[in-house]
Figure 1: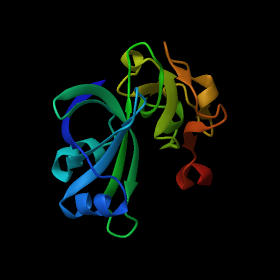
Figure 2 (figure 1 turned 30 degrees about the vertical axis):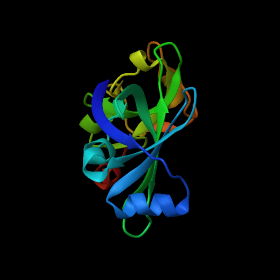
Figure 3 (figure 1 turned 60 degrees about the vertical axis):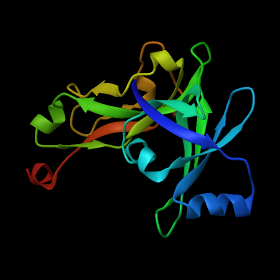
Length: 185
């Protein structure tokens, strides 16, 4: 999995007034949990842009006032009108403790149904998995070459080494739908 370097500073004051002051100064309030204690800190908006606005997943190497921690992005709060990032939650990760994370799905191959004139549709963009952080891949590759017209691939049919899939087994990952041109024949 890719890594992302991020540095922040501890927040001394907590509460509504202090949090609004952090946002007004152009920073984002953050919290790191999952370790011995929760750590409240702030980061600058420009530093997290490449972490937030991407479909990829990262292990974040956090440096908070000189202390290094390994974490993943767990939750993100965005203002409903201005799309401004309001708050970020990070989860501290350890090499021997499994984590739950959403991993992007990538379809590979040319489906048989597409060769026959159908259209491949990806219904699920990411799957929730549970694994050790070192076993989590950058993306889950799903081969669709044997997928015929009107057929689907469900989560229950998939398996990946060292990963436990937590997404509902009946969720559809991909399907090949018949186009109007094929239906007219």
